[in-house]
Image (cartoon, rainbow, N blue to C red; front, top):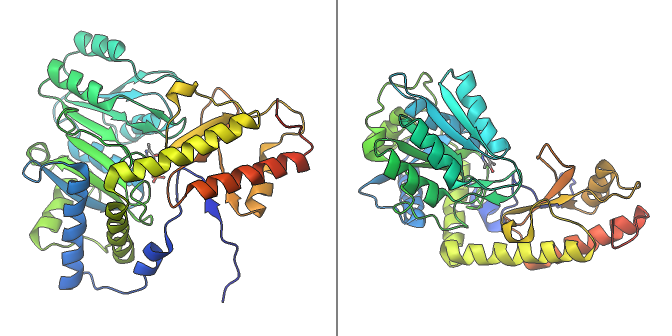
Length: 376
Ligand SMILES: *Cc1c(COP(=O)(O)O)cnc(C)c1O
């Protein structure tokens, strides 16, 4: 038996999953076998139920790869046919990744850039749409996992549809879907992307796209990538029920189990409640230790929290990280450009007792580093 230390992941991903989810994978399935085809169908249907999206209007497409592959697949598939430009509304590195995807794929795009510490402002979006009323596709991130900020997607979606009725609205809800309710109808969400291994708590291996069928079906032949073509992928899933290329069979078994666990936890609202408890424990506990958050109190999210480095000269993040890792606690570096920060996630297979234990480990580590508490 291989020797390893169990670690708790307080990260934005990959995330820890339950032992039953891990156990569910210990079986081989053939990709053409009826059993597997039924599992794929079940998982696709269950995801629409979690989304509370109508199966008449929407469909679920599963795509091999990490979450970014799924985001890129949406841009490839929906890229404007004429000379229309994509509008990307960004306030952090995942929004900026959308911009990079379009640059590399040579998809014409305009980025409406907001600061990393403020959520997306409707009045600025409105002004942009009024000045340039021709965007065929508008894209943004729900929970900007780099800072933790939650953007008002439903309000932006409704605004986009009221000003540009023909435009498609695309949301990267990678780190929020499954834990924060999203109103597809009120928010006029046409496309939404998440991954098997964020709040759904399956293992990494594929992304999930919830797509409005009527929009998708107008996009045949636009993708300049074979493997990222969602129309083609859907035709496989709907046709013979199979993936076009080798499916992540074990990861699908894991997600099916994870979706049962989500239902048993009380669905999206039940999961949100656990993550909320987790986040409150860590935010209050860190504040008691003297740490300051990147975002003001009212903007903190239940998904992940960014904490500023303490000022004390003994604080070296690498050392702090390593000492916590040695105690089985994995935190994550910051991803905002302006301030030195680190992140602590509240999502995945984490419970209040895990957050309390992490706080004890952080306190012990600060003492070992000879940093007086409260810090700063
Ligand atoms: C995790 C995440 C992604 C995808 O990241 P991958 O590393 O490709 O799985 C994209 N957007 C957001 C907001 C995320 O949190």
